[in-house]
Length: 417
Ligand code: JHZ
Ligand code: ZN
Image 1 (cartoon, rainbow, N blue to C red):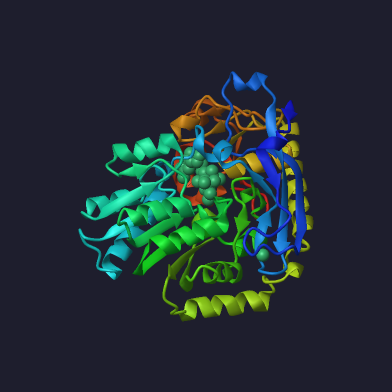
Image 2 (cartoon, protein in one colour; image 1 turned 120 degrees about the vertical axis):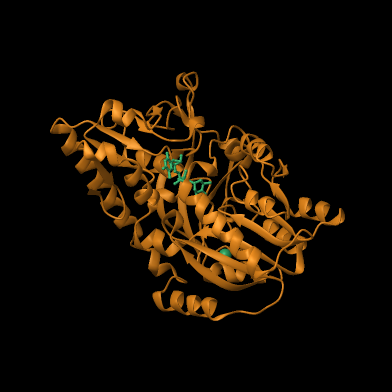
């Protein structure tokens, strides 16, 4: 691998991203890795690739798990960001149910306003548009933002900040609902982002926020969901403190199976903490998720998984098997680059997202093809990089499996199905 380190494009944090405390302790080290969503074109392949330290730490003051390196967000998100939410039917279904539930529960109508931060290609807001409700999407990635406009979702192509919240408020905007799915962990100015939500919500409004949950990450060894875009790995304990700092209250929490186990948070300007939150806080205290001890042996578990997966792939290969991979996911980049899965083991990766075709995975540079390639080539095994959509993908690949093809699911422990 030909790589270089662009130090000027990142900073190493010495204090906690949330509370500013200096008691952050590293418990997992990946060394330097390339950026997970920075897919390479055939002309990039001749160039060295930027790599950045990937190191995970725990804050003893507010319990927040976080990485210590902040890569310039323009590099991460603004420029040819390849992630389009609408390529997953399961995600579309999940998002629609969320919108329908809120429209009913909160009695939303044409006079209501729903804002989504990181609205991507309009996958969620389009459901409100259909119901005649006013919406505004905000997203810094120009490709997905343009796709949202095409489906009738007015979108402002910008990063959401405290300043943007002030500007919108000055224009008379206050939201009944603010959605922020899989973005809170991506924002370098964690406090500014939450302060912006507080400024933009109506007094009786609610922020409905989804974020991957740190407990399944640790329990199911989902270490591949760690990459530079994900700055924070939230517990309810850490979130509760973060919101309170800005006069917001985490009043209700739900567990979701999406992305390997996520939380949906209902956050309001009025304190009305329900049983779901109290129980979750008690659960985290009893499991010790609010203390460093819970995280100390994670690194050993990650090493064991990496070794087992590498051994399995090498054994299959030495038996003459052909192996491809499914899902040019960001987490796939962490997996192949930390385990060391190159062209010697995996021939190509398939993905339904047409924007990813004919590009190459970062670091190991596995070529990305359309999913049809699985039936054309019929490799003996397919390593499932998008393991979070296992049911959906196995159903969709019934023909490949009927012809004898097998999937390798890497986490929580590598297994063949
Ligand atoms: P997917 C994403 O990470 C994006 P990724 C982001 N980094 C984030 O925060 C997390 O989610 C939470 C493809 N696919 O969604 C689509 C098929 O080809 O698991 C995607 O390229 N066929 C902002 O990138 C990839 O797989 C299918 O049937 O790790 C899945 O990526 C399905 C369902 C998906 O997340
Ligand atoms: Zn802290």
